[in-house]
Image (cartoon, rainbow, N blue to C red; front, side):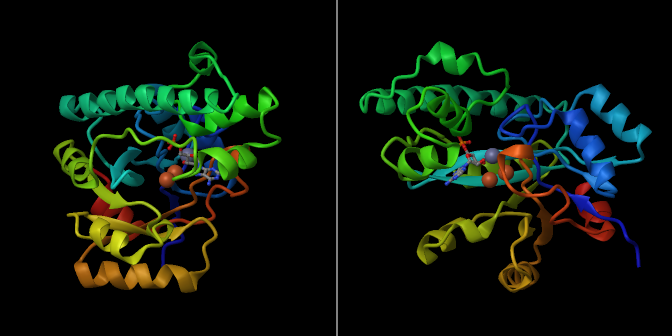
Amino acid sequence: MSDFRADLHCHSTCSDGSDAPLELVKEAKKRALHGLSITDHDTAAAYTPELFAQAEALSLRIVTGVEISTELEGLSVHILGYGYDLHSLSFSTFLQDIQKQRAERNRSILKKLANRNMSIAEEELLATETKTIGRPHIAALMVKKGYVSSVQQAFDWFLKDGAPCDASGFQHTPQEAIKQIQQGGGKAILAHPHFYKREAYLKKILSCSFDGIECYYASLPLVLELPWVHLAKDRGWIVTGGSDYHGVFKNILLGSSWLGLDIFNTSLVR
Ligand code: AMP
Ligand code: ZN
Ligand code: FE
Ligand code: FE
């Protein structure tokens, strides 16, 4: 049996991770991984020629990845895309479109915070040096300005899904994102299905035409992962796994969940 392990879910400084893409490649080698996909929120900015060169020099296999923000009934649903063509015009236009939706959504969140005497100027948020700006960056500014004592408190009290200062604004449905990923030559995977607790809601998400589902996630106990594996088998879907590593921003190690060689080779790599 091969000892090949690929972590297919992590975030870089292009979205809300603390490690730059090249640092993620080094970290992956340190954690004895053989494959990696950097799945930043709504951007492929990590995939530079330098990244591929660094990975090749360290014999780390890379599959292109992204975590797409969609919305169903006003709540966020995350869809992973793997193996898409970096030169796909339709897909890069799709990502740009989501970036515009994000800018608008961030403005809505800032307005709601201002209404509660927690003002943050849009320029301050835009000074964040990253491609994809979202709630974690707003939360960090809330800490900096002394409105809350930690990023977690910012989420728990104000920003988490459905909280008073969360805002909707992603305009694509999960099904539209799936179509765009597939048109871009990639595979569309439902990320962290266990996040969706309401059964009727989960059923609606699962009625979309995914290629696969993220069954192995971070340090989720196996007993909570196996039902997703069974579901994938029933539907003929690909099983994937990854850590959702965000560097120092989350207490999760790169490689805490991973995928073996078979699926990596047969289903994901172009
Ligand atoms: P956004 O893309 O702006 O919707 O922000 C989503 C990101 O915020 C997620 O990927 C997590 O990194 C973080 N996040 C979402 N919900 C929470 C929460 N309840 N506590 C801490 N971080 C969260
Ligand atoms: Zn994130
Ligand atoms: Fe996610
Ligand atoms: Fe993620």
